[in-house]
Amino acid sequence: QVQLVESGGGEVQAGGSLRLSCAASGRTLNTYAMGWFRQAPGKEREFVAAISWRGAYTAEADSVKGRFTISRDNAKNTMYLQMNSLKPEDTAVYYCARGTVSYLATTAAMYNYWGQGTQVTVFS
Image (cartoon, rainbow, N blue to C red; front, side, top):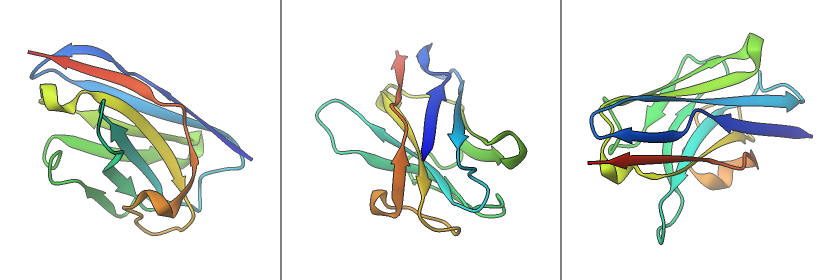
């Protein structure tokens, strides 16, 4: 079993930054892709960013490309999402997830473990 716990969410003014963390316990993350998703009120959950098991490959949604950076530290069983130049439209609950594959996974169907989410609110 894998438990994922997100942290680092909060309220920030537009243009500001936040760094989300996703700590895993239980079975290690090392051989699996990891990802971040978000869900805004009244909207579907959407892909934000993904990283391959060694961290060599990453992918970001067009809406966050150039502003968000995903990374991971397998020794610490932790994944991160550095979010810069935040916009009000980035407001959502952010979820981390562990994939079922080792390469990049950009759809929710490719993930089988999810955290409880952390709220990010960006005000103008």
